[in-house]
Length: 433
Image (cartoon, rainbow, N blue to C red):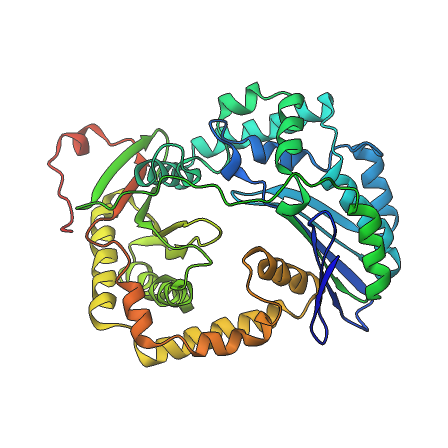
């Protein structure tokens, strides 16, 4: 085992390649566990929803315990444990009193290493996942996002696929398919275990070694490569219509940056000013508050292992779609030309430093923050360095970042109610790019 330690944080890599981070927090009385495997939807291939199905099944039966027995054993000690899969990682998150940490670690290891995908539980979860897909198919907000993803990213790129999966795929998957995905992608070198709370470091490491040490390694892991989206030479717009709806939802934007990109902090701060701070930044203040055109309006940056989208999202009266787009484009262009105000940068820095401090007030928040440190290779002293990192982002870097927003080649996806016959026959105006 290799060990790196700071004053109050230890990182150990087990012989099988599994990184373990321990953060003792005396006096808390509780412990939080955060484990992840880099086995999310980005590995679905041509079967969107496969990883999500696997993650949804992890708590539904292991080699040692049925779903009911696992739930009863955790309830008996007042502990919580849950599992879920996202686009890039699958997580197992738990919390328990310090005295019950052995039970929590053993349960987390069972769930992550030895799920059995029982047929009866598989059918129950399949029904829930398919229902969610059908509900989202009738939701204008979800439909606009799906359309945006198809328009922005090439076929085969993880961000091109619907986050909730494909109904045909979910219907066709067997317990054997789920087991095969788990066996292929859930390996220790693709994972990490973090424990924070009132713990004894050596005793906790022994618990984790016993529970996870037998997890077999299959070799070094590398982030999959995908064809990146090609830049557009002008705005691209598409719309779809859903029956029985009254609201239109729009998504406007393009590809952003990865969490590990050197430009990440500048882009993140630019996004805060554009559509997050206060009443959702300049976008929310203009489109929703001042002009009253939107039920919601904000910008969002999805930066993780992969370059996620950087988009502006809004829900509006269908009659206001073009006006809202014009207002959004205007706010972005203005920010690109003039840059952020000094008070906006001050607010952004205070928000970022303050929100991390709040996050670190709980054992669960600390465990999750340390999971990010491990996932993105930020360094064991990252949480201490974070305020200086934020203070060190210059106005020029933020100006350069906001000018990365593809305002001359954005994608616009709109999901709206079916047009009335009168509106359908009337000439339609489009906002200037």
